[in-house]
Length: 70
Image (tube, rainbow, N blue to C red):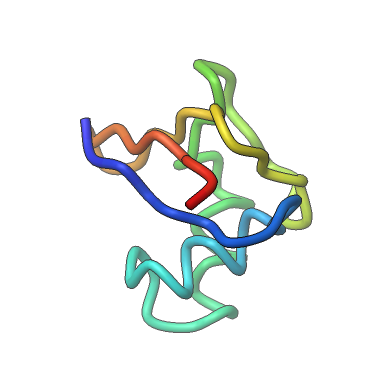
C-alpha cells in the first residue's frame, strides 16, 4: 500500500487523483470515478467531489493508497 500525503483536508476525490498523477487531468479523473473504477474505504465511489480525509484508503487499478495528513 502506498501513502498519499495531503496538506489540508478535506480534498475532493477527483482533485486527489489528478494531483497524484493517477489521472492525467481533472476530466479524466471524473470519468474514472463516474465509471465506478475507484473505491474509497472498500466501497465503490461515484461522487466526483467526495471529501477525502486523512486515514481514508483509495483503491484504483488494483493498487491501494492510504491518505495521510502531512
